[in-house]
Image 1 (cartoon, rainbow, N blue to C red):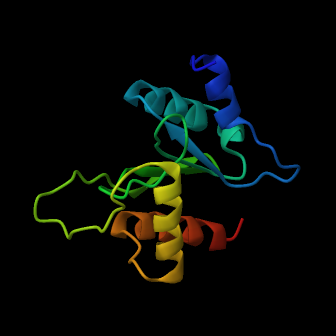
Image 2: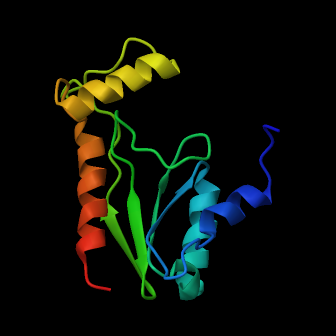
Image 3: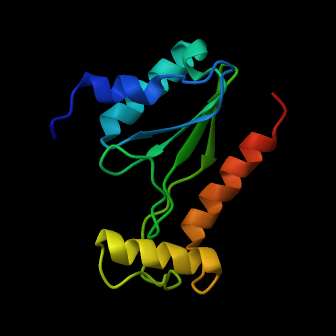
Length: 139
């Protein structure tokens, strides 16, 4: 329907696994970061299995190719900032991006990154590293 409502937030915090698993939870507006942080810290069972909270786009968890977003990890009643936010900087290394943002062009660009023809943007690589580190930690 194209209209946001409370169901969007509820879906983000659902634990869909029988044995609690790590979830990537996103927010679009800063006030949602505050409310989700409160939820995960005041009710640790809501973060069972771990929750990585980061800024998303259009309601989806995404890695921003242009800048590093903050990533917080909620687990076992603790909260840790694993990645601090960085704003786009004029002297930052150039990231080769597709010429347009339509689905077909984006898919071809992703394929070229997966083949190794185009380097993985540093911000994306860092987020992947952090997720892999969290997954490897003993439960």
